[in-house]
Image (cartoon, rainbow, N blue to C red; front, side, top):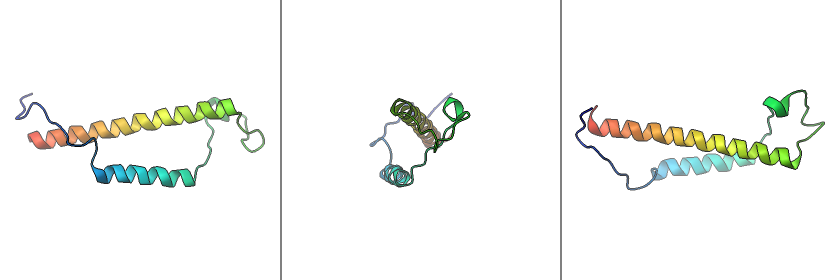
Length: 90
């Protein structure tokens, strides 16, 4: 692939507008937090009758945090790639 510019640097990690939108979304989602059970935790279990133990809750939260981080990284990779392609006129 022949590029006009073989590198690109960003003055900030993400644009301030995008960062503010992510923070705003996170603050809104904390206010209306709902527990949903799937997989092993949700099989034959009613969360109202038998709530999660502290260990199960910590495990679930760590899995959710890892999944969210993964999707944010994917989104940022796509946005950066699109920007680089746009700047190089590919």
